[in-house]
Image 1 (cartoon, rainbow, N blue to C red):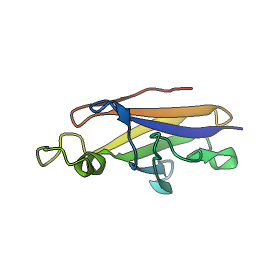
Image 2: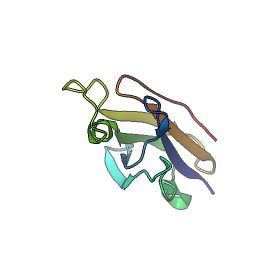
Image 3: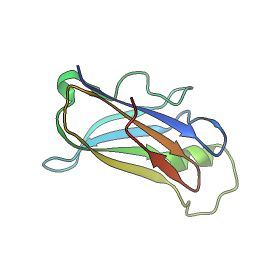
Image 4: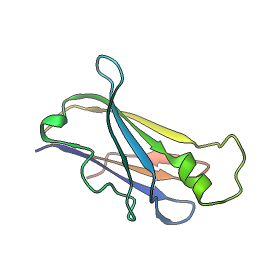
Length: 116
């Protein structure tokens, strides 16, 4: 059974990104919101973002509320933030596989990859 998961790591502070808003969109035939959730104490979501029949081949976006997270930490940051909402657009070719989309983020940069 295929599934989509994520994990957010705060690389500036060396810890999981806790309480970060995660919104998942499907882009085929328009931009349709599928899910809103928050990361837990470990920077993960308590359940897969999508799984089983809900995960189909196609194009998706995950939007991470990184800017709100860094504002909540109370650090002095310039406005507007350099990294605010992080939008990751990616494709699901085989919906029977596990697609893990981690985010490594700081107020100044971010990166991702297809994890396992």
